[in-house]
Image (cartoon, rainbow, N blue to C red; front, side, top):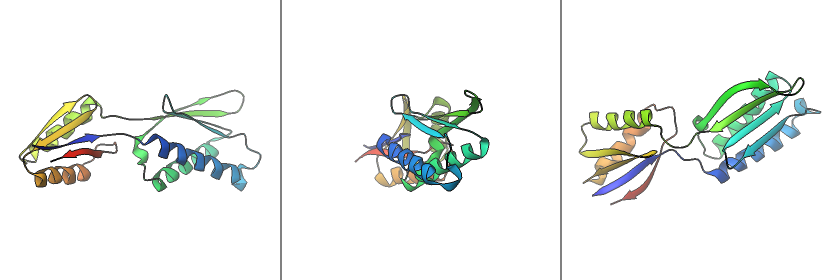
Length: 163
């Protein structure tokens, strides 16, 4: 039986590189000259913390992070932009959580879409991933194509293809 897993994982090193490049880009921009803006990334909790003076700069920083993620082949859909909170004085702080794994609701939707496709495969939820098995590799490739066309609001990767 051939199988593969549908997962949502972020390459931590690529994300770290994207944030570092965005940080350097922001420091070198003219409109950020003399700014007290900071971008901090905690690798253990997967939280990006942005601190800056106003909303315009906050938007510029988040756009820089998104564009650098795209250039590193990371999907910015994995970012969960939380609410802004006022830090000390006139500073604004925003915590951005990096989402990994497939939650139960999305996993159920994926399994339902696979079953509705009438392909001769079976899908089962395993923790934070979905395992798809079938007799033919062509059927598995059809499932991958189906998942790429679907809208699940998270980036999906297809790993551990075994024949």
